[in-house]
Image (tube, rainbow, N blue to C red; front, side, top):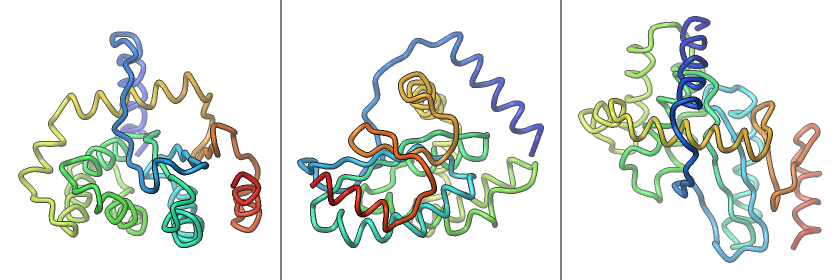
Length: 197
């Protein structure tokens, strides 16, 4: 995957040089807009620690806080390689909003099956198979993957996040704009949230 990652980093650098920063609001988000707490998670869909956060923390958060209207949860794209970028494109590819987190969960759950190797065509095919599980059609997904605007928007969000939040690893978590550092343990995480309510 090294060559793919090198190519991806060159793409980011070129994008940074040639395109201005623009504000975007197309976050993948769930929960009450009026919540006192907003959690922002900056993730790369190929990152094992991000998949672990989603499986070990997100689902508990959903049950204890999000479903009760106490927390808004936002997934922010911070792709570290081309495979993660393409998975983000599929995540935003005409998926019904109520199913975006279902698809996000499936992408993380099956990460080991699609996120390895150096053949981006095979990787894309594997991502599209996952997209089909939430009724995305293959033609639409192929069209999304060729859409420069979708790619530019995600790259722009990554660059803006780097500029504003100084992201140095994924996942990086913010609770009401305050960076959560240290090992992500749900009990400690829950205590912090309860203090903010």
